[in-house]
Length: 213
Image (cartoon, helix red, strand yellow):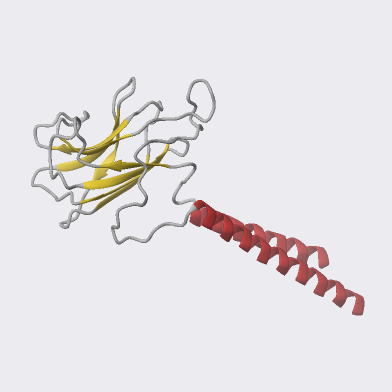
């Protein structure tokens, strides 16, 4: 009886930990890099010049989120996020559908990520004449970044990424901000502590009860 109670308490702690981990894992963090997106001289050639945004991504987690504002919808135009630069073909990150007030959000996995030498992220405008499967020629906002290795040698998928133009905060889109890594870790440790305390109390109670019996 006593062993069964302790085992059940431990199982409960594991279930709680699993639930917390899953709740926080919906938004992969790793070591994310933030890149400011603006109407970039030498890159941008289309759209409103007051549009701006932020790209948050992690090569280690194959994760990307894009927040834009002042990017008004246009008839016949679809906005797309692309990673460009480096020694290979551009990588399509995903479509961005801004609302009537120019605010849009894209959160996705980096599908087909096979290299880590990209240097520019662009928001491209796909029109009726854009070639299918290729980066459109009309470029709205964009941002440059530099992949900096945390170790010497060739970059690896798990290397820490860092870059220039790191903004202080994301544009205010009115959406709830997901918890940070430290917040999720703190919540996880709190759940473990509570579950462990409950197990100890239950163990002590059952032990005293067995003595009386």
